[in-house]
Length: 330
Length: 96
Image (cartoon, rainbow over all chains, first blue to last red; front, side):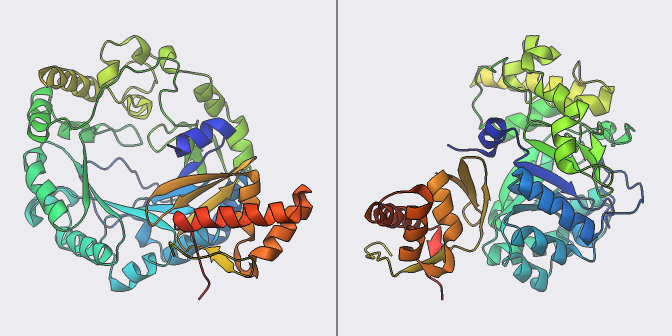
């Protein structure tokens, strides 16, 4: 099957680009990696030029994220611009600002899916993580509005110490209200490298309990050491609200700024992109790690935690060990 | 439109919600309503570009015939066959 990854590697283009359109947010999630540096965000005119350049470069899919993208007063105009330029759009939001009017608007654009985070099956638990009372109610209402309009809606559960035991109830709730359900156990430092969120990370025993509850629904197969470790800088890149360009939202090694150079120039010539395209799985520690077939290597999270792309993190290692253990029992 | 007989007088347009990009020798599409990816070769990509909801298939076949220096009957056959594939894949529709 054709994938955007195939397209990227065939043509050497960023077929998928992550646009962090703001770092502002009305929620204060306890584990959030985003640090709002309160600088001047790109204007709609600056985005128009960027989108024209990305279209020229061959980008097809835009992931619009934040912060909370809907906090921008011009978000409708921005999404419409993307749609009119024939991009497909994924929207990551907390759903807080989705009302009937906005849900109707979303039906009119090239929207592939909306992804929102859910942290529990009950308001008290979810709101204790977002630290905003009423955010659960707003979220479930947003899901209802989107599902009613036939918009593909994903709910993602980030498993942490305070909520991981509620995952099954949350999955049942998500499916009941018509959303697809995903989960993740990886918590990273903030993007200024501060490590407070790591206190929320599941221990190995908690991960074992979590995956035993959820079961392993994915198949493991041997990794190919000549493959890229991930798509960062190979088929995707991320652009901050201030115009900074990174390989992804976690691997925040600056490749350039679109206010100083054209995005095509940055994509084709930035040292970090050349470096990532020149390395394969075997060139990282992962290539010789006995756990690699049970791991989803993420050099971005390694970078945030260790400030180097080599080595591993406790979270990645624990997850891979638990998955290997449980896969052996299957 | 399963049994619809396509003629050169027909007019079609790209279905709403289909994002696409022309690359070197192919056109890649994402149908956002279904989350599916498609790709066409260069000639099919030119036909796709020309499906603007205004010009008929005969006119599109004429452009293909002159652009690629192929016989007009052969171009018309290729256009009709490609449109039937697009209809089958639900990527085009008749203008309102």
